[in-house]
Amino acid sequence: MWRRIEPAQVALDATGAPFSERYGDVYSSRDGALGQARHVFLRGNDLPARWQHREQFVIVETGFGLGVNFLATWQAWRDDPARPRRLHFVSVEKHPVDAHALLRFAPVELTALARDLAAVWPLPISGWHRREFEDGAVKLTLAFGEAEHVLPQVVAGANAFFLDGFAPECNPDMWSPRVLRSLGRLAREDATAATWSTAHPVRDGLVAAGFDVSLEAGFGHKRGMLRARFAPRWRVRRYEPPRAFNGERAAMVIGAGLAGATAAWVLARRGWSVQVLERGPHEASGASALPWGLLHPQITADDNDAARLTRAGFLAAQSMLQAMPPASEPTPLWRAQGTFVQASDADEAARWEVLAATLALPEGFAWFCSPQAARPLTGVTPRHAGWWFPRGASVATAQLCAALLAQKSISLRTGIAVERLRRDADGWIAEDGSGAAIACAPTCIVANALDAPRLLNVAHASVRSVRGRLSLFEAPALAALHATLSGSGTLLRIDEKTVLAGATYETDASGDESVSVHEGNLQRLSRLLAAPVTATPIGVFDATRCVARDRLPLVGAVADEAATLHATALPPGAHLADLPRQSGLYASFAFGSRGLALAPLAAELIAAQMEGEPWPLERDLADRIDVARFLLEAVRRARR
Image (tube, rainbow, N blue to C red; front, side, top):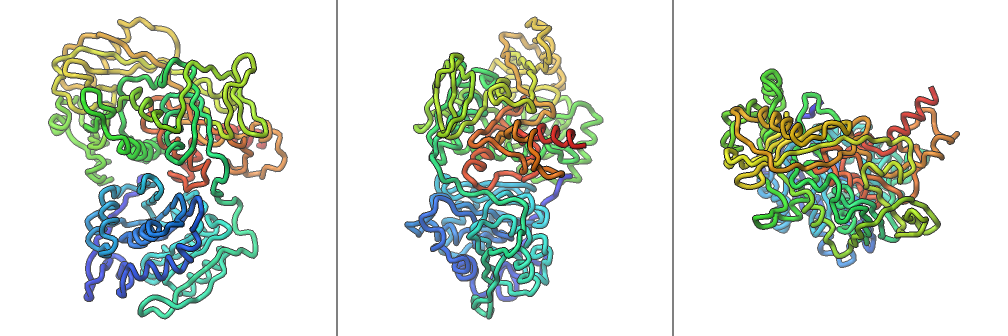
């Protein structure tokens, strides 16, 4: 179900300190928020000394509040010449403040950083929100939701914990045994924790989670604070948290469509050297050759997997696109003109209107509007009411792939047919049909859609092809269209006279007459508009989608099927984390018609798995797209 996020309202107490009337407590010490951040959380975790000369350092915080702890940590990272190459800061917040409050209450010394944070502050929507600073060297992952629900969904290997939030007597849920147990699941071997709270339940909870706890001198008027070090005397978790990567940053990506291009790009930004092998004559030779595609999330009453994934993917794709500003006309890389997704009929529109009132979504994300209200937003009158996504966009897909691959550390080789993958002691070798080596690398990502299961030699990741054709229409009557439409079809403007409409969803090779394709797409066009328009077909875009059985993508570390199916040591209630994986082998495919919304998120997830970084989405969502999920189903069926 949809988890509504209620933003915080920050008041001032009698002393002028930021105060929460909801919890009856101040946001930080009245003796100074910056002083508390430095004394309790930085010094309490022996920072910056403990992070120096590391490749990666991960901090997990409970309670982002006004962001002072993050800003102070970011400033300390900036000031330290021996700082870690990558700093990850993961923070949980149930009631986020707005950007104005971040700026208003930021300590003077941190105003410039607070301004940078406020400029990219996310909307109050449940889920994960990642923001990058310092060219990606500092990554902030904000998890909006209740700590008891959110922390078990975090996948990260934490080096330090900042235990903040309102006092245990004011907000006991933030300090519950379940929350504190989550720290033991996330802690790396050298992990430390610090908090200003010395309450006995907090001490006991940390000890139960595997920490040694000591009482230290507090900040300001507080006599004490707690410091802790992870040193479990018994087994406190089933799985070890991710370890920081320590190896050669060289990878091979097979496929230069959206999946492969985004995977190569996110690795290149992390300092990897990437070689991309493409069977076609150029990048985006397959379905990613789409001239323009739509980028928008979905909204459902039950907030199902597809809705949550497309929302997370939409946010990830927007971050990627904002790192690559639109090119100048007449050939922009993307157009942030908004997207209108209309209901299929009046009954669905009525249900959506009730849902909109229930959800009370932030207007910056989406709102429900009538066809008449949609006209000034889109330039045309749609047939039915629907959702308006002001940040929806259209993207020149093939052009985007080319731009992503145009990085110095990425080499693209086209016309290369990889027929076999083989592993030796040094990594993965791509071979041609004669068995000759084409390329090799310690790490390989297979992102070549329909051919991926064969190349991976997996039987439990089957996909099917679904043909999709869009029509190019000359339609001067739609010259006023300045947004994209979706719902019972797709409509976007190419230029003043031409629009792109469709698309077919063909599960067999029959009916390939272009006239019938245009007729079908004209019907889709008519279902999108309140009044008929004259449209003359002038061309067709024809491609094949790659679709998995459950219509979700297949992403992540590839399982060793033979070892899994013959394993005798798997526990009775085996989970995905129990399956043996093939070292250095990853996959990203089966995006169907959602490549723009999901490929960037998939690429970030794979990069996080490779680097041992905090994952960019919840654990259960990552499980839903895990490339080994059908294999796990087979194992469970065999054991019944």
